[in-house]
Length: 364
Image 1: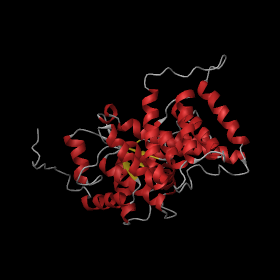
Image 2: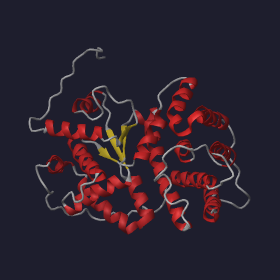
Image 3: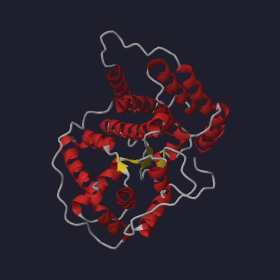
Image 4: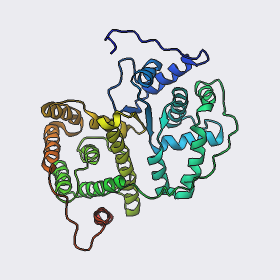
């Protein structure tokens, strides 16, 4: 066992671009776009020393979980060979690919391609996946680093991988559950007869009585259903007179919740023992919500206090009440029987989705 003040020395290949990688890591840490599913080291989340300590001493690989906008830009840069539009999401995608290549970080793009396929179809998603596979190839690290630090203005010409023809438009079960939950929350938000606290309470009651206590969806709704939070982009167009657009906004929000649920799953002790996960998104609403799911305290009273503090900007004097309602709901579903589907219903989640879509589609 290492002593607390022991020194750890690492040997690096002399050709390793240490200064470049440190600069890229520092730039990434400054974006606020990254949420680790673990307590970050004091040295800094993406310092070369911290990454080497995790991989060589702790023997823990690091996995990057990027959202769709990041993955799409990684694939586009590989396809076009140039950065193109220099906006924050594109810069984030470029720096992440360069850093991941340099530090041998695995990128897990599965959810991003399922999301893309749902919107654009399997053919488009599989074509983009071909270019992502080209981008995520370790022997091209130098090219990505040079592009990231400005030593080069383009990648070498690349050819896409062979098509995989995966059935990506098959929505994951977790997404379907989150979609049902966000549909219910949206219908409640459109009910002008209810106060914000009543809406949140009704959502928790529905989860407990008719569905599941979907923690990431409930946490998402601490912001979406709140009276004070900036909600732009949380559920896009849900008040639109075009109700198809409103439903598309709910589907998109359900993907956001699913990224949060995947981060939460990978932060659990059993998963963390296999790999560390870092969530990456240029969506500020998501990066604000993600830490709420990772509050690291042991006592319930400490959790209540910490969550109340974080909810106060959105709920004001009701923050403690909202946090308490959430904790009571979690405790209340422990050991309960699963909801019983109506006679003749084989797909209960699909049944609740259809119910929620009708409510949102007919809301004014």
